[in-house]
Image (cartoon, rainbow over all chains, first blue to last red; front, side, top):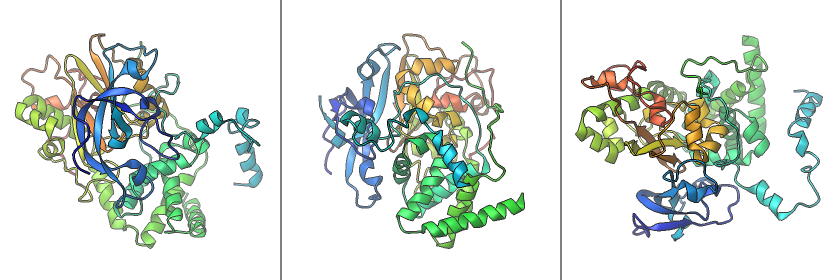
Amino acid sequence: MANPRFSIGDEVTVRDETTLFHTRTQKFARGRTGVVVEHRPEWVIPEDEAFDRMETGRKEPFYVVRFKQTELWPGYTGQSIDTLESEFSERWLVPA
Amino acid sequence: MQYATLMERVRHLAPEERNVLDSPYQIPNELYAALRSVLHDVGGQPDAPTPYLEKGEEDWEMNTYLTCECLGWRGAWNSEMRRRAENDLGATMYFGLPYYARWITVAAKTLVDKGLITTDELGQKIDEIRARLEARD
Amino acid sequence: MTSMHDGHDGHNTFPVSSKVSEFEILELAVRELAIEKGIFSAEDHRRFAEWADGVGPHGGSKLVAKAWSDPAFKEKLLTKGTEACKEVGIDWLQPTGTGTPSDYTFFYVLENTPKVHNVIVCTLCSCYPRPVLGMSPDWYRTPAYRRRMVNRPREVLAEFGLHLPDDVEVRVHDSNQKSRFMVMPMRPDGTEGWSEQELAEIVTRDTMIGVALPDPKVRVPVPAGEVHQ
């Protein structure tokens, strides 16, 4: 795969796609919008690796996305400045 | 374990759910979605504060870690296959087993799934080792 | 609030039902079959055990202490984590030559500042930077920690005895892919003039997970010299 589609600072939304059996895209992140804060190297996506396709699996760029906690959890009881970061392969992100 | 003893144990697992989830003729879409949602994804689920304990690894737990890593090192599986296989255990086993018991159970399952060992080889080896260890103690 | 954390010397009773553990039996069965069939060797297992025996929180403690003492090293640690690790004797490619199957080789250090406090969790399993911190604590792997650290971080931190000011951003890192993280806490006051060795002793495991802060009065022994893996 060529250049990463998203740049640092881009607002992205995590896709809410039906997933059977295995995923590493958490339910709490789906449909939520955050900001790309880091690029990560290309790896085999976990949806392929989990089914013994380490060698032949699809590779994609990964991104660190930072969310405001108040975006993730309605009724968040901490402070409004609090954040959460997690990583997603390119297929899981769309421009916000 | 004797059949009757085993059945008695199984009967007591999540008894409040038994009438609802005993191979029902039909279930609503929402229940199907909940049942098939990926099990390890627990972040944000309601829970009460629980003491944070330092149990420390027993020998079999450390050996389980090492055996699972060696299986990965030599290409029998990868770590994501282990994590997926843990989900495949289903909720009762996933949450019923200690952490490393989940690991070693799915290591055995994956070797069988991949045709690297057979269930009868595994069963015979287990019986042989049990006899060896009981003689030791 | 009293801490729910029982500390490093907690001796709790964890009942075991019978004298020979079926888990021990199953592990031996899998290992012996794997060795008989040539999937891996007894020597592989021994080599991995030797590596596992050498890793522990002292690796991370040395990294942090060196970063506190040496600004150039700190910069390297924050930007080229695995490269910096080599300077204290930690090689992320060990023990296999390509890294461990579960930890991979992407290591990032998260710097605490007066405005940001970092904490790590893996909600999906229990991803943890074993090469620098050793085996994860048992509580880190529990569903209870995984469930609540993401949406109630300040409450969980309070249960560990850590109360952060309202104007400090709590940044939770849910380690859900191949990256492995470690927190670099801030150097506390009262440690001026301390040697790297002395500093390393206050950088406890929990301060590098992010559920505690270094305390000059709380010291854990750290072996001197390079980490031997």
